[in-house]
Image (cartoon, rainbow, N blue to C red):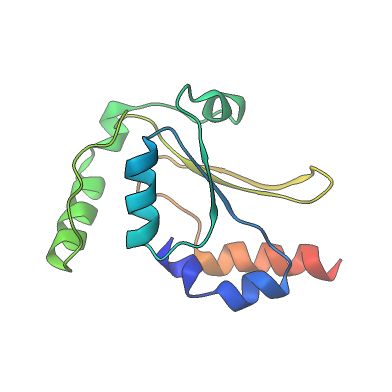
Length: 132
């Protein structure tokens, strides 16, 4: 999310609205938004209906694999605070780009918590939509 925050101007230029959906608590989500400088809109989905509708999987094994653990070690070593486990640690996320007409331009379902498309890839898709 911090990488998206570094590209707010480009997001504005492509007329993009970012919506973060989480199943966590409001307090936990607010703290996370503060830590990541995120000015984005937030939707709480405690029953994970949106996660189910978009086909996002749950996997305890993939959520806590060696790559994920190593990522957390590096973040902690870089000074990031550990906030503990928030809710369902097996729930996997994803990234979706949907235009104003509801057409899905990207449906990226993460294999594990470290698996996300690059910000540059996201911006390229947004630029292509905006220029169309």
